[in-house]
Amino acid sequence: MKGNIMNRARKWLAIGFATVVASSVFYVPTVAAHGEKSQAAFLRMRTIHWYDLRWSKDQIAVNETYTMSGKFRVFSDWPEAVRHPHVSFLNVGQPGPVSTRMSSYINDVFVPRSVGIELGGDYSFSVELKGRRPGTWHVHTMMNIEGGGPLIGPGKYITITGNIEDFENPITDLTGNTVDIERLGLGTIVGWHVFWYVLGIAWMWWWARRPMFLPRYMRVEAGEANDLVTDTDKKVTLGVMVGVLVIVLYGYESAEGKHPVTVPLQAGLLGDIDPLPVNYDAMVSVDVLKANYRVPGRTITMKLEVTNHTDEVISIGEFATGGIRFLNPDVIVDDTDYPDNLLAPEGLEVSQQDIAPGETVVVEVAGTDAAWEVERMADVIYDPDSRFGGLLFFVDPEGNRMPIPVGGPLVPIFV
Ligand SMILES: [Cu+2]
Image 1 (cartoon, rainbow, N blue to C red):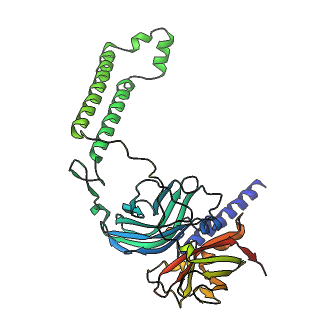
Image 2: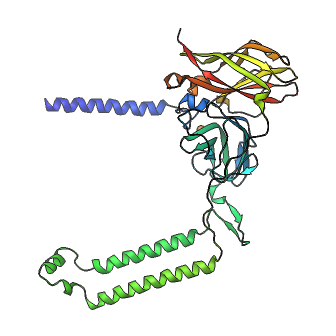
């Protein structure tokens, strides 16, 4: 009976093992997701909207730099689950320092620390990155919000060629020395750690040469504890004690002599950055009359009341949400080499494209693409707040783009 159960267990183990092996052999990942897909769709649609993104290159060599730049809108209908972005950090989503961040700017303010950004504001940003580790890496724009977590922007594949051994990161400090921070102080750090570690081992060896436990225990029990520590032991102990103090003092003095000018870590919130001085929302007003999405499906539809406050004819060119861009090909053709998996070049259908100056119209807009499912926006069905947000881009005859936020309840349709 027992042997029977064991046999059956073995059989199922073998089947399970074979299944795991087989599935991993046949599984070929195509487009890798890097965290953002698993985040709640309503959070991704109602926090930071990245747009006008540009990557100066997507092929670089080790030590070569590229720039990731663009704009972002801080959505005004910010979800309760994320704290307001008064302490935010402009980050880069990549698997470790495959490239190093040389500089980052928001509205031309250098932002090595956290900053505050305002709800409803538009900002420009740029990040310069320097190739370090060869490979093909999916690099994301990203904003970390204190009390909210990582808000991950669109990711693009960047290929770095060369050899990591050639990577250099030279900086000139304020005392005029040029140092390579890739290797700066490495010898000193390793040297001191090894030295103290060896000293600790030597101290233990000094005592552990002699029998350690039972004989000593018995002699302590017999009242002969004092005989366990010899005169030589006492001299060695004193020598080590004085030696350690002298070496610490020497180390301190020599470090002071070598680096007479040092400053503490520079930290602290850089304060609020003012949004770009352009008020797109005053140019066009959009009311969402209703918005739906089909379950299962890959389409979001909106009925919008649009008023054109400008004195030019404007056209609906794009709807963007959660990094996905649905384009109306008659108005906008992407020339930025936007990531394929997030781009729907012909994904936007509109019942009326052009809106005359001063005119108020009701427009039906439908965004359709596999990305809606692949990026799991359709998973808004699982979210506790079925509201969406996004940017609708209107384009004037000169080609200027006006991002106008849209948002509101998003109601699923099941039949
Ligand atoms: Cu990624």
